[in-house]
Image 1: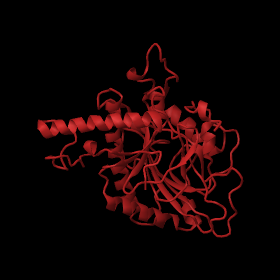
Image 2: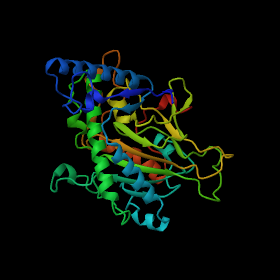
Image 3: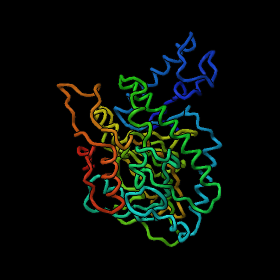
Image 4: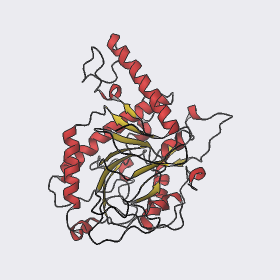
Length: 368
């Protein structure tokens, strides 16, 4: 499969999976000592430059060399399928206590992502989902306790599959480490110290969402304009997506047209979210994307699974323009706002099926 509109970027120089000449593949990604360390440092700079180019243009990349074990990925997909095969009545026991709690089960047709962009009306999206967040945090820590009712609310685990919690937490933790590595590479790409984002995203209320798109026997075709997932941008800093190699995901390209995206073997699809768009003053764009239904003439279940890891910012971090992305000729485009206020405004629209009042990063693209 060719790259298409979304380029493949090998980040192994940042993850420790690098196999440059004379370099131990398991070496510390930050080791810059000696000739091999110098070669690695140069490769890291090249990767950062490539990420900057990608984030300035399409906002999506296919990431390889990420270091997440294939066995863990396979186990996560398998347990996801087992969960979604449970009876609806059993899954419905895991409904969250309120729309502000991004945990547990979201039934088919219960959300409409278009509301996150400020839409006044939208048809329900044709997917079901299961969400988890950080599974454990230090009791008594004021930072976490302040959001224990929302962003750090307890996860809602099913009784079966019995291994789901262990597998999901292991995968969640692996993706959190990968996201932290990506943020270091992003910082270098933005001419900032590599640890710049650690104090802004290092204790983020990350969320992982498993989605299943499935046409049930006897179900009606999609209504005109109805999507499996409505067009939206992601709310956080970046998203790491694991998806089946089937059609459906589309992104809005720089040419103003929608382009289909299918994952390369072994790759994660990574995209920039609204927080980085706002931090970078639109140097990097949070790209609109959607999931379209299969053609009506194509019968059968048309199964598509995806698992999105949303790397957010610390809930008390202030989202304001980075010093390297603002000047007298390029003033700040967005007001300063806490991550918590931004995320809640974005989340509640699709959950309550009402228009979101959140600050938009897509005003010039909503007519597409």
